[in-house]
Every structure is written in structure tokens, then in C-alpha cells.
Length: 404
Image (cartoon, rainbow, N blue to C red; front, side):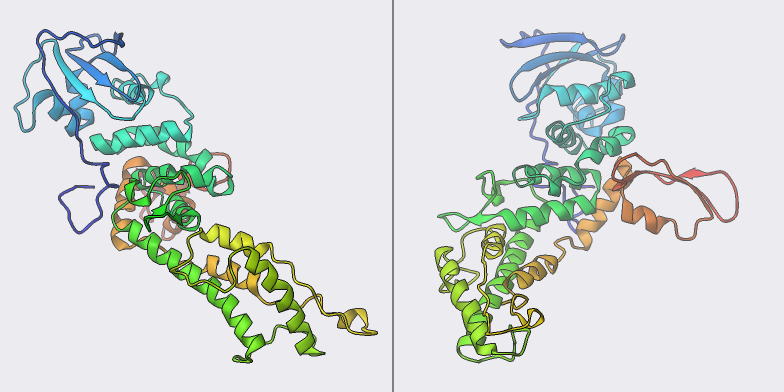
């Protein structure tokens, strides 16, 4: 998306800000630990001296190929707004920051039509590096033939134990490739796993402050707001149960049998209070004062075991084992009711990125079927979460057209 459009959130903070030292050197001396790679094009007229996460390398490339692939890369070679002219062994220094050189090489293979050398699978870390580069160089469409297949293994990341440590990377990938579904899941994961540090800032599971992560515009504020609202619902439900039973302040009934209700509810609450006390949840804290994560709070509540009243000579069907204080039920409901952090501007950006990358969420694919007589859809085997960009035939007949 164009960075000039202030009405839309730009790519995540720093993603579109190309801060890349450039130099055109006639007598270039490669720095130490620099390796010379094979030529990417038989008529290569540019030498890229690239500094990556841990090494330098030189690549002999076609300046025109890079220019066609990316206006940003073209500007690095010819200068911004400069007239295109013939080059002769120009050397350009490029710093790609923390990105591994392997990801940059993958893009160079695509730019120079070496498609057989483009990987068909990608780890999350490598895909994060690749999408970091496509965001910097504004060339998302370059990876359209591979983006869906690269992303597919990671669409159910929220079910993996590693999710809380890499959700920020998956969120960036989703933002760059246009998957609203994956982005919502990863933002939810960050929201429920974040806790407050000694400075009062929300901290990611990796220990990094959320404000220092690369996030779409406005998402940090949404995380703060949604986390506070979720904590408030859960903690308030605990306090409400205590008040209802001790002070009879509400109409809620936690005993399901209607027999010896006071004894039943008092026993459940008494057994719960000791466990809440050990977990730092009694006296019940406010959402603003609770420093741990939503996930930690829910885990503590899941660990609360209630003791149930046993009346004399009760028939099995009149037992109190089904009675509950609704702690767990209310916590699950609060998690499900978490609001959608994506606003209209975010969705518009994601729509544009989806068109560029070819990645399409399954729900969107179903919606696109409306009003179409026939549809030829290439699906990728697996979970079915993502579908590749498809082709359809209009109602008036005619040749199938690419929707991308």
C-alpha cells in the first residue's frame, strides 16, 4: 500500500521505511567475511554488496531486472527519479539489517527467473525474512506463485506451543501477505500472552516490549484495550460470585439442585477461596492491577477444584457434583467475546496485499463464489485454510479471467 495514503495504516512500523545505506563505488574493496557469489544474469551490470544478519556477500545482477521487480531497488541503482541509463559494472552497497542472506537470494532467483531454485517450502523464520524484504522493497507481487504454499503450514500456528514466542512474526507475515484470518489469530495470541513489566509496559512472551515490536498502526492500542476488557470480565465474574454468595447481592444461583443451596454454595466458595488466595486472586485484583497474562489467569482458574456438598441419603440424581461457581465458564466466554482488533483501514490494506500476494482466506474464497456460474479453483492439500487465487467464468460466458 502506498505510504502516501495517511488514511490507511502503513505496513507495520519500520516495514516500509527503507533505511539502506547506498554507495556507488568505482574501486570497491569487499569487506572482510565477504563472499563472491555466482552471477545471476549473463549480462549482469550491477554488483550488489549486501550486508545481512551475519555476513556480507556480493551478487552480480541485472540492474534492469531489479528495476522492473521493484521501484525501490531501481532507485538504489539509478537514484530516485533519475533517468534510466546504461550501466557498466556499478557496485551498490545494500544493508538489509537482521534479514538472513538466504531470503535475499530467494528473491534474486525470482527476479532473474531462476524459478527452479526457489524453495517450495519455507520455515516461519525464513518467510518472515522474505516478507520483511518484500515490504521494504514494495514488491509483494513477486512471490505470488509461492506465497500461499509457503504460508499454508503456518495457518494453524495458534495450536502450536511455540505460538506465543513467534506470533509477532506470523502477524507481520499475515499483514504483508493479506491474511486477515491469521492476523486476527496472532493478535489474539499476543493479547492473551502479554503481561505487564516493572515499567508498566506490556511485554511479549519473548521479553520484548510490545511497543518495540513491528505491528500494524493502531494494533498496540487495540491489544491494550482488549486485554484490559477481557481481564475485567473474568475478574469481575469471580468477584460477583463471592458477593452473591456472601452478601446475597445478586440473583445468580450457583447450586443447580435447589436442595440445601446455602450449604452447597458456601462449600464451593470456601474451597475456591483458598486456591484463589494461593494464586494471588484473592482479594480479587482489578484488571488494571493484574500484571500477569490473560492466559495465566485462565490457567489459574482452570486449576480451581470445587468441593461439593454431599447431603444425607441423597439419591445420585440429586447430588451437587454439577453445581459450579461459573469461574471457568465465564473465563471461556470472555475469551470468545474478545473484540476484533482489525478496523476498516486494516482490512482495506489486507485486501490490497491479498490481491498482490495471491493469498486468500478460506472464508473469503467462499464469499467470492456468489454470483459466479463456474469456478476453477486450485486448492492446496492440507487444512484447507488457504486457497490459491482462483479463476472464474462470468455469467455471460467467455474466457476465464484471473481474479488476481
